[in-house]
Length: 447
Image 1 (tube, rainbow, N blue to C red):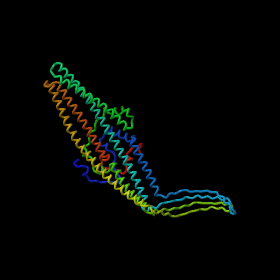
Image 2: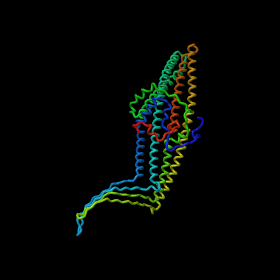
Image 3: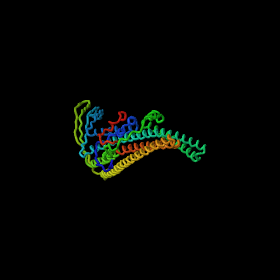
Image 4: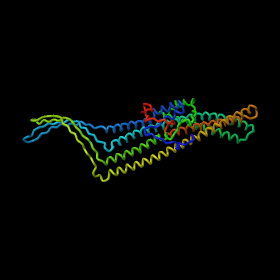
């Protein structure tokens, strides 16, 4: 890409976000299977999905406030009165009473809007968890693949350096080389063997981490290690073929949540303003009542209808202070959004820069490997012609091996930069948005 993210046209959509599907661009079936397993079984995803269900339950409760509340009331009593007209009397009453508060000032709509924003923030939290888990799985998996390849190369280098040391020691015994070369060979061999041990440790630790991400016992990673011999780093699809735009950054979960916080603060101002005005409610009831005093008895329907007015008269400035505080909270949320947006665009620019420089580094290391291969072929031909000794051939093979290791390390780093770019862009390289489809893309067990 020839232009930075911040130079692109900014577009927004209040009800949609990019689909979290960045890993599909690698076309790696092994990675796809592990990400699917992690999203289905990871406890972080389950926790975020539970937050969505909780937010939806609160939203349903707030929507219920738009309907009249109906209660069934009943009473029964028995009383005795002393005196000339005294006696025992019985009474009963059973009625249904309905109440409904008129939303003249939009308070109830503002409260419902806050619950909607809470739900949307919970969906963004699910997206954030999916991005984080999938990125950790991919990064750890490709680290495992790279370390397995490096381990194989290190074993080959140990064998070559051991062979070279034996050759040097033999020539030292013949008096044709100095002791300095022997000591240097032993030092190189010991360092290479230590590197080999380090790769084995990296493999074990990374396999434990990947097992935990897949909700497995980290102490039993054999099934993961069994996949490594057939695995390789995937070819990198060209980034220029992907339709990137700043619209993706606006769909980042943290930006979605920050904007929802701004909108929720705005609705809180509406609620506090509405509290400064009178509230009106309607009441209605219908039922039956009866009485029995011994000499008189009867029963029949009873009903009532009315309205209530509640208006603040004197609160010593409490409601006004609440409005002032909510307006300040809105300004605070807006400033926080601006800060989050700046960080998001910086993250994207940094990720793009790292990725482009990583591409250049891989290209240079590919040239270096090509040169090492050519050098080894040239030295081998001279060795077969008798114009070069075996020690030179071993050194050329070691140089080729080391060039392969450097290239593989940088290829894996480029994959890591690509994963970081996916996180900076909100979990997708595709500028296709879907309306609240986060849960639909998750396995049923995590919903």
